[in-house]
Image (tube, rainbow, N blue to C red; front, side):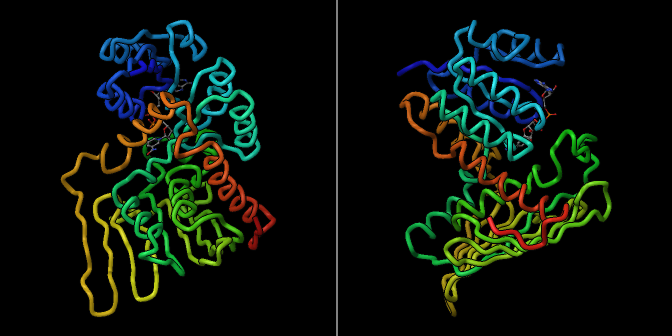
Length: 326
Ligand SMILES: NC(=O)c1ccc[n+]([C@@H]2O[C@H](COP(=O)([O-])OP(=O)(O)OC[C@H]3O[C@@H](n4cnc5c(N)ncnc54)[C@H](O)[C@@H]3O)[C@@H](O)[C@H]2O)c1
């Protein structure tokens, strides 16, 4: 089995989640850490037997094949472009960029350099959404319409989360995951009718969007940044012919099998979050794609298409909207 040597740029919450998973994948070596907080860099490097380094390019000097970019949103584009230029394969946390222009430039660079690039849309590997996707792909559930919500309780913690120069805007945060999920389950978007406003914060923190997909499926999507963390803050409801799918975050999935029939329920409450949120499988997928020299299941183009939806929403509220045709 080919050894895959990886480095990690940014070792806060999600960087350490990936490190914990990577250390348990057979044939993976963690060789370098790039982290500006020196004490953290030293501690994490020591824990995983890696070298603390100053910048992403130095990963090549310690023999890395790939880098995980898990630093804040606004750093992703620059670090990813430099990594690709150095010939590294890249796993980039979402959002892969905070503008559509940069997303397209990144896609072009990935294609030109032929590196393997995966974007961190982990929900595609989460148990609840895999269950829905399998039923839709097998034809057992044919969706006609849907309702999606992705809320946050606040934009107070961490303090930078309300700073649009840092995040790119609220929609680039967890809302982006469910824009990607909408495409994953229902295909590409053709039209949006977008209402957004600044209710509590100096950012568009309330969104009500009506969506038409290219295959004719219609749905609604809401996202609120000041919802108080009442659960479930994340939910997808899929409506077929007297059948329905729904979830409570990553904890439970429901399948109503028709009028007068049972509701099948799967409860993942006791499963480790790294598994049920899809992080373990997405990391295995990236490492296998490198070993097999193939395109991973979540591509740079998937990253671009999710950001196209975000961009359309911001264009709508900044003067072009409310009706946007993609
Ligand atoms: N896919 C998911 O479910 C998921 C979950 C959490 C976070 N994320 C994304 O991952 C990224 C990091 O989020 P987090 O919650 O781990 O944040 P965090 O603040 O906990 O960690 C970020 C780390 O990056 C370091 N850093 C800052 N600037 C840097 C730079 N220029 N180069 C290298 N490192 C730098 C910080 O010192 C910190 O250690 C964000 O883009 C976020 O949107 C994704």
